[in-house]
Image (cartoon, rainbow over all chains, first blue to last red; front, side):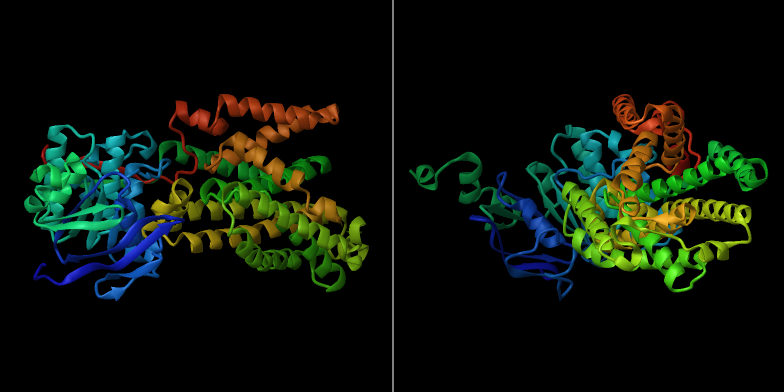
Length: 248
Length: 343
Protein backbone atom coordinates (compact mmCIF):
# COMPACT_ATOMS: atom_id res chain seq x y z
CA UNK A 1 0.00 0.00 0.00
CA UNK A 2 2.66 2.50 1.01
CA UNK A 3 6.30 2.53 0.09
CA UNK A 4 7.31 3.43 3.66
CA UNK A 5 8.40 0.79 6.14
CA UNK A 6 5.58 -0.79 8.14
CA UNK A 7 5.57 0.32 11.79
CA UNK A 8 2.45 -1.47 13.05
CA UNK A 9 0.47 -4.41 11.76
CA UNK A 10 -2.29 -6.77 12.80
CA UNK A 11 -2.29 -10.22 11.27
CA UNK A 12 -5.59 -12.13 11.19
CA UNK A 13 -6.57 -11.03 14.72
CA UNK A 14 -9.82 -12.37 16.21
CA UNK A 15 -11.48 -11.73 19.57
CA UNK A 16 -14.80 -13.02 20.89
CA UNK A 17 -16.77 -12.30 24.05
CA UNK A 18 -18.78 -15.51 24.40
CA UNK A 19 -20.72 -15.97 21.19
CA UNK A 20 -20.13 -12.37 20.09
CA UNK A 21 -17.24 -12.01 17.70
CA UNK A 22 -16.06 -8.41 18.18
CA UNK A 23 -12.97 -8.74 15.99
CA UNK A 24 -13.06 -11.12 13.06
CA UNK A 25 -9.80 -12.10 11.32
CA UNK A 26 -8.75 -8.46 11.12
CA UNK A 27 -5.52 -7.54 9.33
CA UNK A 28 -4.11 -4.09 8.80
CA UNK A 29 -0.80 -2.36 8.28
CA UNK A 30 0.32 1.15 9.17
CA UNK A 31 3.32 2.65 7.42
CA UNK A 32 5.92 4.73 9.27
CA UNK A 33 4.65 8.32 9.24
CA UNK A 34 1.28 7.35 7.77
CA UNK A 35 -2.10 8.64 8.98
CA UNK A 36 -4.85 6.03 8.76
CA UNK A 37 -8.55 6.71 9.35
CA UNK A 38 -11.02 4.16 10.71
CA UNK A 39 -14.78 4.44 10.34
CA UNK A 40 -17.65 2.10 11.01
CA UNK A 41 -20.99 2.01 12.83
CA UNK A 42 -21.26 1.99 16.63
CA UNK A 43 -20.42 -1.41 18.08
CA UNK A 44 -18.44 -2.43 14.99
CA UNK A 45 -15.36 -3.26 17.09
CA UNK A 46 -13.26 -0.15 16.44
CA UNK A 47 -12.35 0.53 20.08
CA UNK A 48 -11.68 -3.18 20.62
CA UNK A 49 -9.21 -2.93 17.74
CA UNK A 50 -7.38 -0.19 19.69
CA UNK A 51 -7.44 -2.34 22.83
CA UNK A 52 -5.88 -5.19 20.85
CA UNK A 53 -3.15 -2.86 19.54
CA UNK A 54 -2.46 -1.14 22.88
CA UNK A 55 -2.69 -4.36 24.87
CA UNK A 56 -5.75 -3.82 27.08
CA UNK A 57 -7.34 -6.89 25.46
CA UNK A 58 -5.55 -10.10 24.45
CA UNK A 59 -6.59 -11.64 21.10
CA UNK A 60 -7.93 -15.20 20.83
CA UNK A 61 -6.10 -15.68 17.55
CA UNK A 62 -3.67 -13.76 15.38
CA UNK A 63 -0.68 -11.55 16.07
CA UNK A 64 0.14 -7.86 16.51
CA UNK A 65 3.51 -6.54 15.31
CA UNK A 66 5.16 -3.23 16.20
CA UNK A 67 8.41 -2.07 14.66
CA UNK A 68 9.09 -5.57 13.31
CA UNK A 69 8.58 -7.29 16.70
CA UNK A 70 5.73 -9.56 17.79
CA UNK A 71 4.06 -7.67 20.68
CA UNK A 72 0.98 -9.93 21.03
CA UNK A 73 1.92 -11.03 24.56
CA UNK A 74 3.34 -7.70 25.73
CA UNK A 75 1.55 -5.91 28.62
CA UNK A 76 0.09 -2.44 27.90
CA UNK A 77 2.73 -0.48 29.86
CA UNK A 78 5.54 -2.01 27.80
CA UNK A 79 3.72 -1.26 24.56
CA UNK A 80 3.45 2.35 25.70
CA UNK A 81 7.17 2.50 26.44
CA UNK A 82 7.83 0.92 23.04
CA UNK A 83 6.02 3.84 21.41
CA UNK A 84 2.28 3.20 21.22
CA UNK A 85 0.27 6.09 22.69
CA UNK A 86 -3.50 5.79 22.95
CA UNK A 87 -6.51 7.88 23.90
CA UNK A 88 -9.70 6.36 25.29
CA UNK A 89 -13.07 6.97 23.67
CA UNK A 90 -14.58 7.34 27.15
CA UNK A 91 -12.01 9.59 28.87
CA UNK A 92 -10.13 8.10 31.84
CA UNK A 93 -8.60 11.23 33.42
CA UNK A 94 -6.68 11.02 36.71
CA UNK A 95 -9.40 13.09 38.37
CA UNK A 96 -7.57 13.98 41.56
CA UNK A 97 -4.47 15.20 39.72
CA UNK A 98 -4.03 18.42 37.80
CA UNK A 99 -3.91 18.47 34.00
CA UNK A 100 -0.15 19.07 34.17
CA UNK A 101 0.32 16.10 36.53
CA UNK A 102 -1.81 13.92 34.26
CA UNK A 103 0.70 14.56 31.47
CA UNK A 104 3.66 14.09 33.78
CA UNK A 105 2.64 10.47 34.40
CA UNK A 106 2.93 9.78 30.68
CA UNK A 107 6.21 11.69 30.28
CA UNK A 108 7.91 10.20 33.36
CA UNK A 109 6.82 6.58 32.76
CA UNK A 110 5.83 6.02 29.14
CA UNK A 111 8.34 8.57 27.87
CA UNK A 112 10.96 7.51 30.43
CA UNK A 113 12.10 11.12 30.82
CA UNK A 114 13.85 12.72 33.81
CA UNK A 115 11.81 15.13 35.95
CA UNK A 116 13.26 18.22 34.19
CA UNK A 117 12.92 16.75 30.69
CA UNK A 118 9.36 15.68 31.53
CA UNK A 119 8.46 19.26 32.53
CA UNK A 120 9.70 20.54 29.17
CA UNK A 121 7.84 17.87 27.27
CA UNK A 122 4.58 18.45 29.16
CA UNK A 123 4.67 22.24 28.76
CA UNK A 124 5.29 21.78 25.03
CA UNK A 125 2.36 19.35 24.70
CA UNK A 126 0.06 21.57 26.81
CA UNK A 127 0.95 24.49 24.57
CA UNK A 128 0.41 22.50 21.40
CA UNK A 129 -2.96 21.11 22.48
CA UNK A 130 -4.25 24.39 23.92
CA UNK A 131 -4.49 23.06 27.48
CA UNK A 132 -1.87 25.41 28.96
CA UNK A 133 -4.44 27.70 30.63
CA UNK A 134 -5.89 24.61 32.35
CA UNK A 135 -2.52 23.24 33.53
CA UNK A 136 -3.22 23.53 37.28
CA UNK A 137 -6.90 22.61 37.11
CA UNK A 138 -7.92 19.27 38.64
CA UNK A 139 -8.76 16.92 35.76
CA UNK A 140 -11.97 15.92 37.55
CA UNK A 141 -13.42 19.38 37.01
CA UNK A 142 -12.83 19.49 33.24
CA UNK A 143 -15.71 19.45 30.76
CA UNK A 144 -16.17 16.44 28.49
CA UNK A 145 -14.52 18.21 25.56
CA UNK A 146 -11.54 19.21 27.70
CA UNK A 147 -11.28 15.63 28.94
CA UNK A 148 -11.09 14.41 25.37
CA UNK A 149 -8.40 16.96 24.67
CA UNK A 150 -6.57 15.73 27.77
CA UNK A 151 -6.73 12.15 26.47
CA UNK A 152 -4.85 13.22 23.37
CA UNK A 153 -2.38 15.41 25.28
CA UNK A 154 -1.61 12.64 27.75
CA UNK A 155 -0.95 10.16 24.94
CA UNK A 156 1.37 12.72 23.31
CA UNK A 157 3.29 13.24 26.55
CA UNK A 158 4.69 9.70 26.18
CA UNK A 159 6.30 10.80 22.88
CA UNK A 160 4.65 8.03 20.87
CA UNK A 161 5.75 6.77 17.47
CA UNK A 162 2.20 5.63 16.82
CA UNK A 163 -0.73 7.67 18.17
CA UNK A 164 -4.14 5.99 18.50
CA UNK A 165 -6.97 8.55 18.62
CA UNK A 166 -10.44 7.30 19.51
CA UNK A 167 -13.32 9.67 18.62
CA UNK A 168 -11.99 12.96 19.89
CA UNK A 169 -13.77 15.32 17.48
CA UNK A 170 -17.38 14.51 18.42
CA UNK A 171 -19.35 17.40 19.93
CA UNK A 172 -16.93 20.12 18.86
CA UNK A 173 -18.07 23.33 17.19
CA UNK A 174 -16.94 23.96 13.63
CA UNK A 175 -14.15 26.23 14.84
CA UNK A 176 -12.95 23.87 17.61
CA UNK A 177 -12.96 21.02 15.13
CA UNK A 178 -10.87 23.06 12.72
CA UNK A 179 -8.25 23.81 15.39
CA UNK A 180 -8.20 20.15 16.44
CA UNK A 181 -7.56 19.11 12.83
CA UNK A 182 -4.70 21.62 12.67
CA UNK A 183 -3.18 20.20 15.86
CA UNK A 184 -3.38 16.65 14.56
CA UNK A 185 -1.87 17.75 11.24
CA UNK A 186 1.05 19.27 13.17
CA UNK A 187 1.54 16.06 15.16
CA UNK A 188 1.48 14.07 11.93
CA UNK A 189 3.89 16.49 10.24
CA UNK A 190 6.38 16.00 13.09
CA UNK A 191 6.67 12.34 12.02
CA UNK A 192 4.18 10.57 14.31
CA UNK A 193 2.16 7.79 12.69
CA UNK A 194 -1.56 8.04 13.49
CA UNK A 195 -4.59 5.78 13.51
CA UNK A 196 -7.73 7.84 14.04
CA UNK A 197 -11.19 6.43 14.70
CA UNK A 198 -13.76 9.14 13.98
CA UNK A 199 -17.36 9.67 12.98
CA UNK A 200 -16.73 13.26 11.85
CA UNK A 201 -15.62 12.23 8.38
CA UNK A 202 -14.72 15.68 7.04
CA UNK A 203 -12.27 16.16 9.94
CA UNK A 204 -10.85 12.72 9.37
CA UNK A 205 -10.23 13.08 5.65
CA UNK A 206 -8.46 16.40 6.25
CA UNK A 207 -5.70 14.42 7.98
CA UNK A 208 -5.63 10.84 6.76
CA UNK A 209 -4.43 9.54 3.43
CA UNK A 210 -6.08 6.14 3.74
CA UNK A 211 -9.34 4.95 5.22
CA UNK A 212 -10.57 1.56 6.41
CA UNK A 213 -14.16 0.61 7.18
CA UNK A 214 -14.99 -1.88 9.92
CA UNK A 215 -18.32 -3.59 10.43
CA UNK A 216 -19.08 -6.59 12.69
CA UNK A 217 -15.39 -6.74 13.63
CA UNK A 218 -14.17 -7.26 10.07
CA UNK A 219 -12.53 -4.92 7.59
CA UNK A 220 -14.94 -4.49 4.72
CA UNK A 221 -13.36 -1.68 2.74
CA UNK A 222 -9.95 -0.03 2.49
CA UNK A 223 -8.30 2.57 0.31
CA UNK A 224 -8.08 6.21 -0.66
CA UNK A 225 -10.65 8.17 1.45
CA UNK A 226 -12.78 9.56 -1.38
CA UNK A 227 -13.06 6.20 -3.11
CA UNK A 228 -13.92 4.45 0.17
CA UNK A 229 -16.63 6.96 1.04
CA UNK A 230 -18.23 6.43 -2.35
CA UNK A 231 -18.03 2.64 -2.20
CA UNK A 232 -21.17 0.52 -2.16
CA UNK A 233 -20.32 -0.99 1.25
CA UNK A 234 -20.10 2.40 2.98
CA UNK A 235 -23.26 3.64 1.35
CA UNK A 236 -25.05 0.52 2.50
CA UNK A 237 -23.89 0.88 6.11
CA UNK A 238 -24.44 4.62 6.47
CA UNK A 239 -27.38 5.28 4.20
CA UNK A 240 -29.07 1.89 4.42
CA UNK A 241 -29.08 1.76 0.65
CA UNK A 242 -29.04 -1.79 -0.61
CA UNK A 243 -26.67 -2.21 -3.54
CA UNK A 244 -29.35 -3.94 -5.57
CA UNK A 245 -31.88 -1.15 -4.88
CA UNK A 246 -29.37 1.46 -5.93
CA UNK A 247 -28.64 -0.39 -9.13
CA UNK A 248 -32.32 -0.80 -9.94
CA UNK B 1 9.22 21.57 20.48
CA UNK B 2 12.13 23.92 21.11
CA UNK B 3 9.86 26.93 21.23
CA UNK B 4 8.04 26.48 24.52
CA UNK B 5 6.74 29.09 26.97
CA UNK B 6 8.98 30.01 29.90
CA UNK B 7 7.80 28.26 33.05
CA UNK B 8 8.67 27.19 36.56
CA UNK B 9 7.37 24.28 38.61
CA UNK B 10 6.67 25.04 42.25
CA UNK B 11 6.30 22.36 44.88
CA UNK B 12 6.22 24.16 48.23
CA UNK B 13 3.50 26.57 49.33
CA UNK B 14 3.37 29.27 51.99
CA UNK B 15 1.04 27.14 54.13
CA UNK B 16 3.45 24.21 53.87
CA UNK B 17 6.35 26.34 55.16
CA UNK B 18 4.22 27.53 58.10
CA UNK B 19 3.08 23.94 58.59
CA UNK B 20 6.68 22.69 58.68
CA UNK B 21 7.57 25.27 61.33
CA UNK B 22 4.59 24.30 63.50
CA UNK B 23 5.38 20.63 62.93
CA UNK B 24 8.93 21.15 64.18
CA UNK B 25 7.70 22.83 67.38
CA UNK B 26 5.17 20.01 67.98
CA UNK B 27 7.95 17.50 67.40
CA UNK B 28 10.20 19.11 70.02
CA UNK B 29 7.34 19.15 72.51
CA UNK B 30 6.57 15.49 71.85
CA UNK B 31 10.23 14.39 71.97
CA UNK B 32 10.56 15.86 75.48
CA UNK B 33 7.25 14.42 76.71
CA UNK B 34 8.82 11.89 79.15
CA UNK B 35 10.07 14.88 81.20
CA UNK B 36 6.75 16.69 81.40
CA UNK B 37 4.02 14.08 80.91
CA UNK B 38 2.73 11.50 83.37
CA UNK B 39 2.75 7.73 82.85
CA UNK B 40 -0.85 7.58 81.66
CA UNK B 41 -0.25 10.46 79.25
CA UNK B 42 2.80 8.72 77.80
CA UNK B 43 0.79 5.54 77.30
CA UNK B 44 -1.94 7.54 75.54
CA UNK B 45 0.64 9.28 73.34
CA UNK B 46 2.18 5.95 72.32
CA UNK B 47 -1.28 4.74 71.36
CA UNK B 48 -1.87 7.90 69.32
CA UNK B 49 1.49 7.38 67.57
CA UNK B 50 0.82 3.83 66.51
CA UNK B 51 -2.68 4.65 65.36
CA UNK B 52 -1.29 7.55 63.33
CA UNK B 53 1.34 5.25 61.81
CA UNK B 54 -1.27 2.60 60.97
CA UNK B 55 -3.53 5.27 59.49
CA UNK B 56 -0.74 6.72 57.31
CA UNK B 57 0.08 3.22 56.06
CA UNK B 58 -3.54 2.32 55.34
CA UNK B 59 -4.00 5.68 53.61
CA UNK B 60 -1.02 4.92 51.36
CA UNK B 61 -2.49 1.54 50.55
CA UNK B 62 -6.16 2.46 50.07
CA UNK B 63 -6.12 6.21 49.51
CA UNK B 64 -3.29 6.31 47.00
CA UNK B 65 -2.70 2.84 45.58
CA UNK B 66 -6.41 1.94 45.56
CA UNK B 67 -5.84 -1.29 47.51
CA UNK B 68 -8.73 -1.16 49.99
CA UNK B 69 -7.54 -3.82 52.43
CA UNK B 70 -9.67 -4.84 55.44
CA UNK B 71 -6.98 -7.27 56.50
CA UNK B 72 -4.08 -5.17 57.73
CA UNK B 73 -4.56 -6.75 61.18
CA UNK B 74 -2.85 -9.78 59.61
CA UNK B 75 0.45 -7.87 59.60
CA UNK B 76 -0.10 -6.22 62.99
CA UNK B 77 -0.60 -9.70 64.44
CA UNK B 78 2.31 -11.25 62.55
CA UNK B 79 4.58 -8.45 63.76
CA UNK B 80 3.44 -8.84 67.36
CA UNK B 81 3.80 -12.61 67.39
CA UNK B 82 7.20 -12.46 65.69
CA UNK B 83 8.44 -10.15 68.44
CA UNK B 84 7.13 -12.45 71.18
CA UNK B 85 8.49 -15.62 69.55
CA UNK B 86 11.93 -14.16 68.84
CA UNK B 87 12.28 -12.49 72.22
CA UNK B 88 10.88 -15.36 74.34
CA UNK B 89 12.40 -18.33 72.50
CA UNK B 90 15.15 -16.90 70.29
CA UNK B 91 16.79 -14.73 72.91
CA UNK B 92 16.71 -11.79 70.53
CA UNK B 93 16.76 -8.30 72.07
CA UNK B 94 13.16 -7.01 71.81
CA UNK B 95 14.21 -3.78 70.08
CA UNK B 96 16.11 -5.73 67.42
CA UNK B 97 13.11 -8.06 67.16
CA UNK B 98 10.93 -5.07 66.13
CA UNK B 99 12.93 -4.75 62.90
CA UNK B 100 12.84 -8.51 62.29
CA UNK B 101 9.05 -8.46 62.85
CA UNK B 102 8.79 -6.14 59.85
CA UNK B 103 10.83 -8.52 57.74
CA UNK B 104 8.66 -11.49 58.72
CA UNK B 105 5.47 -9.54 57.94
CA UNK B 106 6.89 -8.67 54.51
CA UNK B 107 7.80 -12.31 53.82
CA UNK B 108 4.24 -13.38 54.65
CA UNK B 109 2.88 -10.52 52.54
CA UNK B 110 4.33 -11.96 49.33
CA UNK B 111 2.23 -15.18 49.12
CA UNK B 112 -0.73 -13.24 50.58
CA UNK B 113 -0.42 -10.75 47.71
CA UNK B 114 -0.36 -13.48 45.07
CA UNK B 115 -3.64 -14.70 46.51
CA UNK B 116 -5.54 -11.46 47.11
CA UNK B 117 -4.25 -9.61 44.01
CA UNK B 118 -6.37 -12.00 41.95
CA UNK B 119 -9.38 -10.19 43.43
CA UNK B 120 -10.67 -6.67 42.67
CA UNK B 121 -12.57 -3.99 44.61
CA UNK B 122 -14.95 -5.37 47.24
CA UNK B 123 -13.69 -8.91 46.64
CA UNK B 124 -10.16 -7.76 47.39
CA UNK B 125 -11.37 -6.18 50.65
CA UNK B 126 -13.17 -9.33 51.78
CA UNK B 127 -10.28 -11.53 50.59
CA UNK B 128 -7.75 -9.68 52.75
CA UNK B 129 -10.06 -10.02 55.75
CA UNK B 130 -10.43 -13.77 55.17
CA UNK B 131 -6.65 -14.18 54.98
CA UNK B 132 -6.25 -12.28 58.26
CA UNK B 133 -8.82 -14.58 59.91
CA UNK B 134 -6.86 -17.59 58.66
CA UNK B 135 -3.73 -16.19 60.35
CA UNK B 136 -5.67 -15.62 63.57
CA UNK B 137 -7.02 -19.19 63.59
CA UNK B 138 -3.57 -20.50 62.65
CA UNK B 139 -1.85 -18.78 65.60
CA UNK B 140 -4.56 -20.04 67.97
CA UNK B 141 -3.37 -23.58 67.14
CA UNK B 142 0.26 -22.96 68.15
CA UNK B 143 0.46 -24.18 71.74
CA UNK B 144 4.05 -22.93 72.18
CA UNK B 145 2.67 -19.39 71.75
CA UNK B 146 -0.12 -20.01 74.25
CA UNK B 147 -2.76 -21.15 71.74
CA UNK B 148 -6.07 -19.33 71.88
CA UNK B 149 -5.37 -17.65 75.23
CA UNK B 150 -2.02 -16.16 74.19
CA UNK B 151 1.09 -15.42 76.23
CA UNK B 152 2.89 -12.72 78.21
CA UNK B 153 6.38 -11.46 77.48
CA UNK B 154 8.61 -13.31 80.00
CA UNK B 155 9.80 -11.13 82.90
CA UNK B 156 13.52 -11.53 82.07
CA UNK B 157 12.82 -10.38 78.48
CA UNK B 158 10.96 -7.34 79.78
CA UNK B 159 13.90 -6.53 82.06
CA UNK B 160 16.33 -6.86 79.14
CA UNK B 161 14.69 -3.90 77.35
CA UNK B 162 16.02 -1.30 79.79
CA UNK B 163 16.96 -0.85 83.46
CA UNK B 164 13.80 -0.26 85.43
CA UNK B 165 10.19 0.42 84.50
CA UNK B 166 10.55 4.13 83.84
CA UNK B 167 13.55 3.71 81.51
CA UNK B 168 11.66 0.99 79.63
CA UNK B 169 8.56 3.12 79.20
CA UNK B 170 10.63 6.10 78.02
CA UNK B 171 12.48 3.95 75.52
CA UNK B 172 9.28 2.46 74.12
CA UNK B 173 7.87 5.99 73.87
CA UNK B 174 10.82 7.25 71.80
CA UNK B 175 10.80 4.16 69.60
CA UNK B 176 7.09 4.79 68.94
CA UNK B 177 7.79 8.43 68.11
CA UNK B 178 10.61 7.45 65.73
CA UNK B 179 8.42 4.84 64.00
CA UNK B 180 5.54 7.25 63.40
CA UNK B 181 7.91 9.98 62.15
CA UNK B 182 9.67 7.51 59.86
CA UNK B 183 6.34 6.23 58.53
CA UNK B 184 5.18 9.78 57.76
CA UNK B 185 8.51 10.86 56.26
CA UNK B 186 8.68 7.81 54.00
CA UNK B 187 5.06 8.18 52.85
CA UNK B 188 5.66 11.89 52.15
CA UNK B 189 8.92 11.30 50.28
CA UNK B 190 7.32 8.49 48.29
CA UNK B 191 4.34 10.61 47.28
CA UNK B 192 6.61 13.45 46.12
CA UNK B 193 8.74 11.07 44.05
CA UNK B 194 8.21 9.63 40.59
CA UNK B 195 6.50 6.62 42.21
CA UNK B 196 4.05 8.98 43.91
CA UNK B 197 2.80 10.09 40.50
CA UNK B 198 2.23 6.44 39.58
CA UNK B 199 0.40 5.69 42.83
CA UNK B 200 -1.97 8.63 42.50
CA UNK B 201 -2.55 7.73 38.86
CA UNK B 202 -3.35 4.10 39.75
CA UNK B 203 -5.84 5.33 42.36
CA UNK B 204 -7.67 7.41 39.76
CA UNK B 205 -7.57 4.99 36.80
CA UNK B 206 -5.69 1.76 36.58
CA UNK B 207 -6.18 1.14 32.83
CA UNK B 208 -5.07 4.69 31.97
CA UNK B 209 -1.95 4.37 34.17
CA UNK B 210 -1.05 1.16 32.42
CA UNK B 211 -1.45 2.68 28.96
CA UNK B 212 0.75 5.62 29.99
CA UNK B 213 3.63 3.28 30.79
CA UNK B 214 3.09 2.50 34.49
CA UNK B 215 3.72 -1.10 35.53
CA UNK B 216 0.64 -1.18 37.75
CA UNK B 217 1.00 -4.75 39.03
CA UNK B 218 4.59 -4.30 40.17
CA UNK B 219 3.88 -0.89 41.69
CA UNK B 220 0.95 -2.23 43.72
CA UNK B 221 2.93 -5.30 44.80
CA UNK B 222 5.87 -3.22 46.02
CA UNK B 223 3.59 -0.89 47.99
CA UNK B 224 1.61 -3.78 49.48
CA UNK B 225 4.79 -5.46 50.71
CA UNK B 226 6.38 -2.24 51.96
CA UNK B 227 3.19 -1.38 53.87
CA UNK B 228 3.10 -4.91 55.33
CA UNK B 229 6.71 -4.47 56.48
CA UNK B 230 5.93 -1.19 58.24
CA UNK B 231 2.64 -2.51 59.65
CA UNK B 232 4.58 -5.46 61.09
CA UNK B 233 6.98 -3.03 62.79
CA UNK B 234 4.07 -1.13 64.31
CA UNK B 235 2.46 -4.41 65.39
CA UNK B 236 5.63 -5.44 67.20
CA UNK B 237 5.74 -2.06 68.91
CA UNK B 238 2.08 -2.27 69.99
CA UNK B 239 2.58 -5.60 71.74
CA UNK B 240 5.96 -4.62 73.16
CA UNK B 241 4.06 -1.88 74.99
CA UNK B 242 1.17 -4.18 75.98
CA UNK B 243 3.57 -6.96 77.13
CA UNK B 244 0.83 -9.51 76.39
CA UNK B 245 -0.48 -11.00 73.16
CA UNK B 246 -3.36 -13.28 72.10
CA UNK B 247 -4.77 -14.21 68.70
CA UNK B 248 -7.97 -12.22 69.28
CA UNK B 249 -6.07 -9.08 70.29
CA UNK B 250 -3.32 -9.45 67.67
CA UNK B 251 -5.59 -10.10 64.68
CA UNK B 252 -8.48 -7.85 65.76
CA UNK B 253 -10.28 -6.41 62.72
CA UNK B 254 -11.93 -3.87 65.01
CA UNK B 255 -8.80 -2.46 66.64
CA UNK B 256 -6.34 -2.57 63.74
CA UNK B 257 -8.52 -2.00 60.69
CA UNK B 258 -12.00 -0.63 61.51
CA UNK B 259 -10.67 2.16 63.77
CA UNK B 260 -7.90 2.90 61.28
CA UNK B 261 -10.40 3.19 58.42
CA UNK B 262 -12.52 5.48 60.63
CA UNK B 263 -9.50 7.71 61.25
CA UNK B 264 -8.52 7.94 57.59
CA UNK B 265 -12.03 8.42 56.20
CA UNK B 266 -13.01 11.02 58.82
CA UNK B 267 -9.78 12.94 58.36
CA UNK B 268 -9.68 12.76 54.58
CA UNK B 269 -8.61 9.80 52.49
CA UNK B 270 -5.90 10.27 49.88
CA UNK B 271 -4.28 13.23 51.71
CA UNK B 272 -1.32 12.97 54.10
CA UNK B 273 -2.97 15.53 56.38
CA UNK B 274 -6.13 13.38 56.63
CA UNK B 275 -4.87 10.77 59.12
CA UNK B 276 -3.44 13.51 61.39
CA UNK B 277 -6.84 15.23 61.67
CA UNK B 278 -8.57 11.85 61.91
CA UNK B 279 -6.42 10.54 64.74
CA UNK B 280 -7.05 13.72 66.78
CA UNK B 281 -10.82 13.42 66.25
CA UNK B 282 -10.76 9.71 67.08
CA UNK B 283 -8.95 10.14 70.39
CA UNK B 284 -11.00 13.18 71.43
CA UNK B 285 -14.19 11.18 70.79
CA UNK B 286 -12.80 8.18 72.64
CA UNK B 287 -11.93 10.23 75.71
CA UNK B 288 -15.37 11.92 75.61
CA UNK B 289 -17.31 8.68 75.20
CA UNK B 290 -15.19 6.65 77.59
CA UNK B 291 -18.04 6.30 80.08
CA UNK B 292 -20.66 5.24 77.56
CA UNK B 293 -19.59 1.59 77.47
CA UNK B 294 -21.09 -0.32 74.55
CA UNK B 295 -22.71 2.88 73.26
CA UNK B 296 -19.24 4.14 72.38
CA UNK B 297 -18.97 2.17 69.13
CA UNK B 298 -22.50 3.20 68.10
CA UNK B 299 -21.68 6.86 68.74
CA UNK B 300 -18.47 6.46 66.76
CA UNK B 301 -20.46 4.98 63.87
CA UNK B 302 -22.99 7.82 64.06
CA UNK B 303 -20.20 10.42 63.95
CA UNK B 304 -18.71 8.66 60.92
CA UNK B 305 -22.06 8.73 59.10
CA UNK B 306 -22.63 12.42 59.86
CA UNK B 307 -19.16 13.45 58.76
CA UNK B 308 -19.39 11.39 55.58
CA UNK B 309 -22.71 13.06 54.73
CA UNK B 310 -21.46 16.59 55.43
CA UNK B 311 -17.88 16.17 54.22
CA UNK B 312 -17.52 13.28 51.77
CA UNK B 313 -13.80 14.01 51.39
CA UNK B 314 -13.23 14.10 55.13
CA UNK B 315 -12.60 17.01 57.48
CA UNK B 316 -9.37 17.94 55.75
CA UNK B 317 -11.23 17.96 52.43
CA UNK B 318 -13.75 20.35 53.98
CA UNK B 319 -10.92 22.70 54.99
CA UNK B 320 -9.16 22.59 51.62
CA UNK B 321 -12.45 23.27 49.81
CA UNK B 322 -12.50 26.66 51.59
CA UNK B 323 -8.81 27.48 51.75
CA UNK B 324 -5.94 26.21 49.65
CA UNK B 325 -3.82 24.82 52.46
CA UNK B 326 -1.28 22.06 52.07
CA UNK B 327 0.90 21.09 54.99
CA UNK B 328 2.59 18.35 52.99
CA UNK B 329 2.54 19.51 49.38
CA UNK B 330 2.87 16.65 46.91
CA UNK B 331 1.60 18.76 44.02
CA UNK B 332 3.57 20.12 41.12
CA UNK B 333 2.13 23.50 40.22
CA UNK B 334 3.02 24.91 36.82
CA UNK B 335 3.75 28.63 36.72
CA UNK B 336 3.83 29.94 33.16
CA UNK B 337 5.90 33.12 33.03
CA UNK B 338 4.91 34.27 29.54
CA UNK B 339 3.08 32.73 26.65
CA UNK B 340 4.46 32.93 23.14
CA UNK B 341 1.65 35.07 21.74
CA UNK B 342 1.68 37.55 24.62
CA UNK B 343 5.41 38.15 24.26
